[in-house]
Image 1 (cartoon, helix red, strand yellow):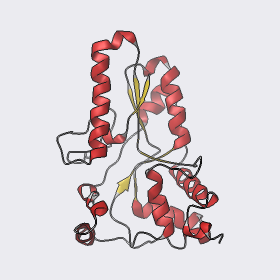
Image 2 (spheres, rainbow, N blue to C red):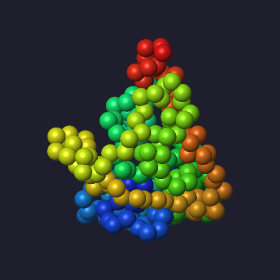
Image 3 (cartoon, rainbow, N blue to C red):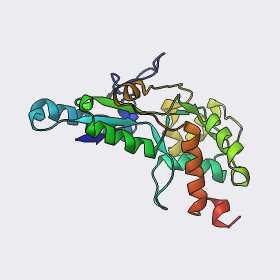
Length: 227
């Protein structure tokens, strides 16, 4: 069995490391967490606890993706895609100092298949991340440079932390990002590359594939108007 977990079960609830997160790290479920992060952590813990009791019945591998981007299959899309959509639509007045890991959905699927079929994957976790984490500013710059007229609404101004905290007083959605504001994180996929031979696409390709899909399905202000 291959369980789809998340980086949420690895890199939250404690002081950021000075080195990239890896599969030995676990989120502190007693920390200041969102419901999503806590649920992902508890769910993966429960899976490993189950294996400790019933492991003779099956084998378990776990894939821990960061933010999943890439081509959409339709107009129904995952939460990670909202970041690109909001940037492209100019729905964000500026760029908060946040950092995200990026991986293409096609490479996440490939890693699942490798974890399912490779004997060395038994009992192991695998981080799915394509290179270093990116700041929102870096993500915006990639979109601005590659998406032409469709990226004309993308902001490039970085917001000071104090201004984001002020906005959080009136916006619950902004309040949720405060624990991560200004926290520089990174993670490594060295294990997946070494053990399973995994080789993900560049981060930029994942982001641009997302943006192109949003245009293709008419999910942006400009694409909806046929511009």
